Image (cartoon, rainbow over all chains, first blue to last red):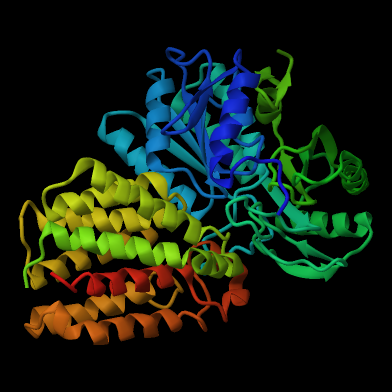
Length: 333
Length: 212
């Protein structure tokens, strides 16, 4: 294993120290328990949005703390969900009297830890609601699994929910609109290489030189199947087929796109992916309202990409356009 | 037999030793069907628990278990943190403030721990989880100790063999809960890491008897 780190056990803490040093005007970092929060928190009367999850997916979630997005983010160890004390302390630090919304990616551990934190906060009289994001179509919906994983759709949920909260909407309304994002967003990922968790020192899985994994998760969990590598257009066609089979789109529909790199993919290749995604959507008359291309929810140094499609209505379009100012996402501010 | 706080402190030291020795093994099992961090997380949690025990010097069995539970909850993460954390917290609550507890009270506390794990994880036997070890072992202990009036030391050999057998029985199962469930049939043929750490838990419970 070759990584630009000092000590595998200190990667999260040292990353947070570096983030705090880079963006003092936007965020502050609290240690033990670890959380990143808005420099201007608490904001009286505003609903607060808190998310979190394992580290190694940067800029998710800490990079999305700031005006118009998250109020706090709780980073766990690498690929390990955060613990309840992190969400509990973060909520008490940022909450402004109007309630707390947790945005949780659908993983067994994340859901359990956020639920425990919500119970603790409710027992002290706070209003807490949660929305679980489960947008990964690689996981066939089934009674016999933990359900779909939360992946790229989380970025849109945090952006749109953050905009609603910034406008001063009530907790129930912010929750409603985040749930609307969750219901209308689908993603799928592929990987060309595995990634290595620093503390493990070995790749999470093996992938042959001529193979790719279709339906990869963001922790290097295996996906639907392992296939021989193909040209990008054919792989993107498979990805879009999977998304459109699950959420059929019609002529005239409008979407936001996230063409996401897993950490080790050149931007050149992401644009090649976007080229084909755009061609496919154009051919069926779906309008591309907004497209993000880059590393938004990563898997350490994995080479791979995911495509997220969010079906929009007027409300979601307006909230998506609202100003945002965070370390990793900013416009109109 | 009477179980004092020293028994539970010895248990935690032994459990931590097994988790440290099996850190890479548990992580390998998890990498095959999960996300490859179970050994790393449990080892970190056990070390945190030992540190807190030595810092706070709790005075009763219940206080020892509560200290362990809180340490695991706040340091393990993943699903294992809440599940093991809850198991220890439920045992702590079940034991009250007694300085010494007997075999039947210990088994009742373990039963509460199992109920806590099942309540949180919603898993049943056969879904390739911790419950595949915990439930048959607790059922066995209830039968032998509560109904049969035996002591833990009388049944330890059988207990460890049963835990090991049930751990291995997770190999042909298809995961229905947790991250391994995403693999569907591809989870078949791998031993469940949570069932494996659960085997180490019960083995430690028996090994802590020596020298009591």
